[in-house]
Length: 383
Ligand SMILES: [Zn+2]
Image 1: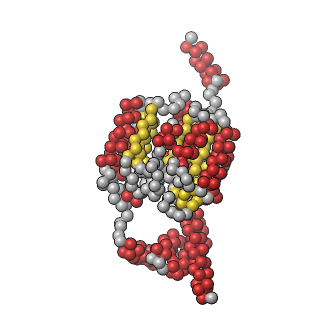
Image 2 (image 1 turned 90 degrees about the horizontal axis):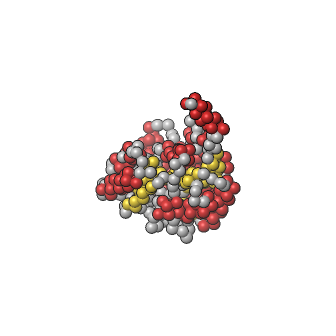
Image 3 (image 1 turned 30 degrees about the vertical axis):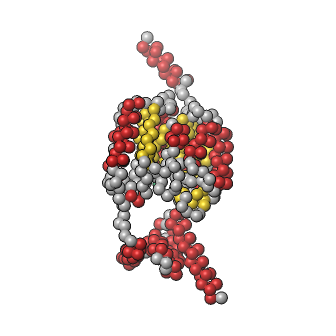
């Protein structure tokens, strides 16, 4: 009888193996300051669609790839460098493409919602809340949404309500960026594969503290200990994930503050975990301090220039050192010197391309433009 049952079970597994879940990926990521007069356009997001999105995540390739665990559909994913608020036109255009991509992918079991959380859009106060609401309206109430964020993002009530699973980085600087995104995807897949689906409970606590990233590095106390408590909490029975957001200080919106969220199936455990994390943050609110030395403006510039000149003299010339030196000269109002050092940075960068990241190259190009402007300006003055 046991053998019959076993054979019947195996036959069921072979014939009736559950189909892979259908999971879409979408999101827009930018940290935009509402205090900057600059605006960010659509091109700045370098948005990709389709299977190309999967290639941007290392956990979708290699021996432990998550790629085989679902049928993946890339809707739209864009990432812009920090800047000013996103124009309404850019946001609406990107959203239309994202929502069209999602409509074409329906029906969906899950959605990996990959955002930063500190995007400001001209005329809006909760851009990510708006984004997830529109996404939810397309995918429907049954699709499990797993949100992944930067800890400098903001969690509005709307974002908290529409996310079924949610997590963020646990390190600043963000050495665990990929690990965090992978955790968001693994939590989503585990819930779909096990049939457990949406967590029974999620706790959201707004912590009425707003500090800049410069004062909340997890390399020093008190953030180090506050964040160090998270991994043990997530191993408690009935808990799926726990996350603490510092929030974003460089925008003036009601959602800009710290927050704690915990998801899981045990109501008491979820509540207790969220309360303990929020209480530890609140208790330490006056202990946060700058991770780097702080000095009055003139002294800080002098010190930066001294350090960079020493570094330049002591070691082989690195483009990044030169770019920082150019930036320091610029900040000191020494525009001609800044332009000269920037031009040198660009030359070294061209010679040493393999050690020059895209971001630094962009910076070098902007200094080169500045050098051109200075030359043009000087020529104009001479004329
Ligand atoms: Zn960040």
